[in-house]
Amino acid sequence: MVEMMKPIIQRFGLTASREVPTDNELSRWHQDALRMTMEELNVEIALILGTALPTSRRPQTAEYLYRLSYELAGEEFSKTWRNDPITRYRLERRKGSEEDLDRFARKGMKTPLTPPTEWSSIEVDYEKLDAMLDRYKDFNVPIFASNAAFEFLILAKRYDELQRVVKHVKERFGVFLLGTHYAGIIIPLVEEAGIDVDGYLTPINADGIHMFPTQKHAIEAICNTGKPVIAIKPLGGGRVQPKKAFRYLFHKLNIQATMVGIGNMEEAEETFASAVEALKT
Image 1 (spheres, one colour):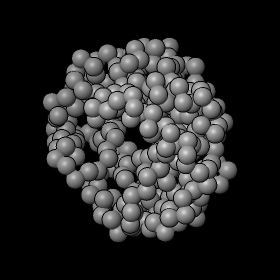
Image 2 (image 1 turned 90 degrees about the horizontal axis):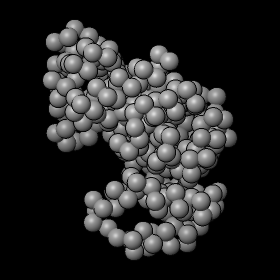
Image 3 (image 1 turned 90 degrees about the vertical axis):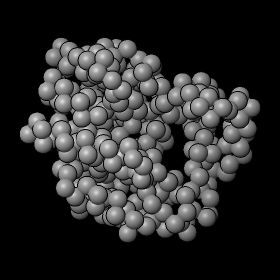
Image 4 (image 1 turned 120 degrees about the horizontal axis):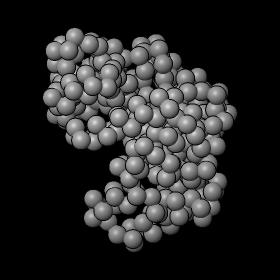
């Protein structure tokens, strides 16, 4: 991992990395690799940190999000969701079938539009949240960017609790970005509720991959917020050509920042060279 980080930083000058703490070995290897790279190159790598939201019970939000998305975008959402390459890739990895998609869609359509009452009793575990954040007290963490687990509080209309979480995190790191794959649903709800987030982290790419409920609705929400947005999945999980991807982000949408996943040096060379070219033109 270090041997890939070092040339990327030296060649392209990258000085930030995404980190989502888990209890597996990969997370610990990543932390060790960051420390070793910083020491060997005498540079500082800032972290864009994100964690799961520890709660007393894990809420199941997928069916409810499906129902809200269908209410907003109808069959256009249904087609977008069913044909989404990342959705289908995950289905294949689980050895799922078309019937599994049908079963989930039917369940989603039967879900009431009002949030489940049991969500009101789910408590945020601030002690566990702090324990996860404490793992990174020796790193420079200028930005906290939540993962999708935090959107449960939006869907449950527990705006006061979300504001408490945001305040709690901002007291440690200063900047809180809300992460979501459902920009067209979540961003307008957050804006309407007046939650004090500093911006958003969400998929944005030229082919609309994993942008829900549809690319059109997601882009409309992204463009209507006056807050910064960091794009994730700009390459659509490796399905969008890098030059096309970064021209779309930086030129057409005027997105100011993006994060990409890199698997090897060949990918790194093509991806970052394309990003640099798009930024210069």
